[in-house]
Image 1 (cartoon, rainbow, N blue to C red):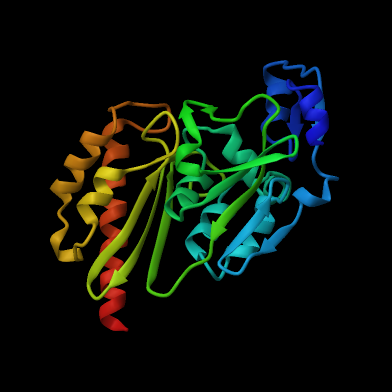
Image 2 (cartoon, rainbow, N blue to C red; image 1 turned 180 degrees about the vertical axis):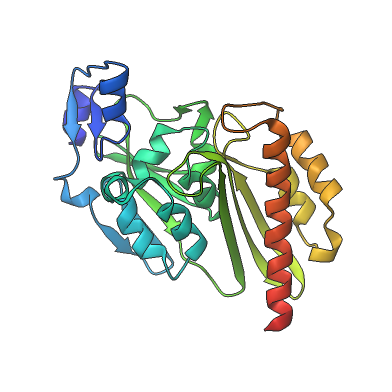
Length: 271
């Protein structure tokens, strides 16, 4: 497959066809070359590497949902709300990533968990952190003939808190207004190694470093709504969209962070 892609760099890779099918039916796209990935065994497996999973590019969202059910239940729930069961059984994690929609559902979770991508071009491979993958709206660092071979997702570790939730007009099978994911280590009542990520707030899913700095080393009682509001305003350009106004998006973006932090603190007190 890698050799074919080297010979024909404009080849359209096809896995679940949940996005390409729309382009063909609605936009009348006609790719010159198509390479189907479903029969490429190396891309259809999940490898347990001890501290991480390596998820092949052709692994379906339904498979990933089952894989993460115990380790990251919030991520699994985001996946469960991703379209219908037939869609999840064919759509792939790599496809969602490469499609690069600003409101892609899986990327905030992956960004908050420090996921990386294994990229292949011919026989050469390189690893890129997902946070460095996007260069703009539906634009990324993939070179001609290069493709995503696998996603490397770290496993949870002791004292790690991971929370995520998707906001949409309809709870089931709808497009995000925004999805927020937060990961941090709980050290006493303090948060360290904080990662916060969103979709729907920028041209591509991204982390929010100003919010991360605001939370780093703090306890839940140190975090105020006004401070998060200021960090969001300093991080993103206000945009109204078809799915939500900026006022609504920024409000729920703030409230989700507050909710995750406060719930984690309450759970620690009860433990």
